[in-house]
Each structure stands twice: as structure tokens, then as C-alpha cells.
Image: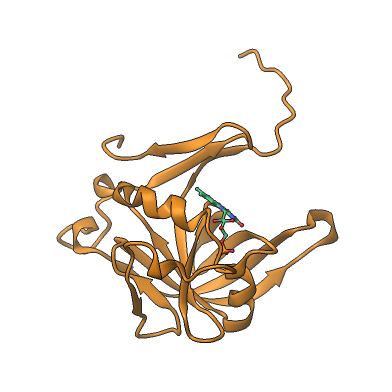
Length: 181
Ligand SMILES: Cc1cc2nc3c(=O)[nH]c(=O)nc-3n(C[C@H](O)[C@H](O)[C@H](O)COP(=O)(O)O)c2cc1C
């Protein structure tokens, strides 16, 4: 396979899009779009641009929810990924409903089929990666819509309909998972 060297600003090779919801310091719900995440057992890692509203609130309030939107929420994903909580309360402007979690102090997004309740454990900020804040969190609970479950409550993988984010910093966009299993 012949390859050439490229000098991209970024190389996003298909990351699931997630919506991070939280109550800010004043108890007001807000939400942001992210594609930088992974999870291993009860640990999650999220990557934020350090100046964003969401990360600076989560650093103080600690609890947050990772919500997995499906493809019907593409417009909401774009809105929450271009507007900042520094300027607006995004839940007032999009068709997403925050519902308080029963186990942590953060809102679950009603319209998302999967929500993962988390609490911050570590903040990683390094001179070598100026402007980037990584956080580690521990998973306290997992909520999954009936539609995604088999009769024995295991995951029905064929139902997944989430969005993947690809790009090189200049050319960027979404692809859908639906019917591709
Ligand atoms: C598809 C998509 C993926 C994104 N992924 C990230 C990400 O992984 N990390 C990040 O800091 N910002 C990401 N963004 C940008 C933020 O969502 C955006 O800067 C947002 O306005 C920040 O909001 P806040 O200031 O309320 O936190 C993404 C945006 C989109 C549309």
C-alpha cells in the first residue's frame, strides 16, 4: 500500500460523538459536544480544549454524564458543538431535555438512548499539550434505552445508530453507523 506523508493539524479517524451534560456552579444544566473519549472498564477519559465552558465547570462540580446521541440528533450535536456555555444555556435553545440523575449531581439527556453517569477523578494538563485538558472519570451508572437491549438485557449491537466524527482539521464531517453491522 503506497502512502504519502501529510502534515495535518489533526487526524480524527472516526470517533463516536458524545454529548457531555452537567450542572454548572449555579445549578444550571448545560451541555457540550465531544469526540475525544475512550473508556476501559469503569474508567473514562475525555479530551477538552482548556478554555471551554464545560471543562471549566466540570473541574469544579465534578459530576457529568456522557450521553450517546443517535443520528436523529445531528442538528443538536452541531449546535452544542459550535455554541459555548460561556454565552448561552444550550438546553434553552435545543430540543434536548435535562433530567436529574438519581445517583450523581448531573443531568441525563432524555433524548439520548445511552447515558453514562460519571464523577471526575483526575485532571491532566501538561506544558507539552498546551490548551488541552484531559480528564479521567469513574463510571457510577449506565442507563440504556430498551430499544438497544436484547431480551436478556445484553446490548443489541445492531441497534447502534450513533455518529462518528472524521477529519483532518480542514476537511471534517460525520458518518453514520446505522445498518453497517
Ligand atoms: C463533532 C464535534 C466534535 C467535537 N469534539 C470536541 C472535543 O473532542 N473536544 C473539545 O474540546 N471540543 C470538541 N468540539 C468543539 C466543542 O464542542 C465546542 O468548542 C463547544 O462550543 C464548546 O462548548 P463549551 O464552551 O460550552 O464547553 C467538538 C465539536 C463538534 C461539532
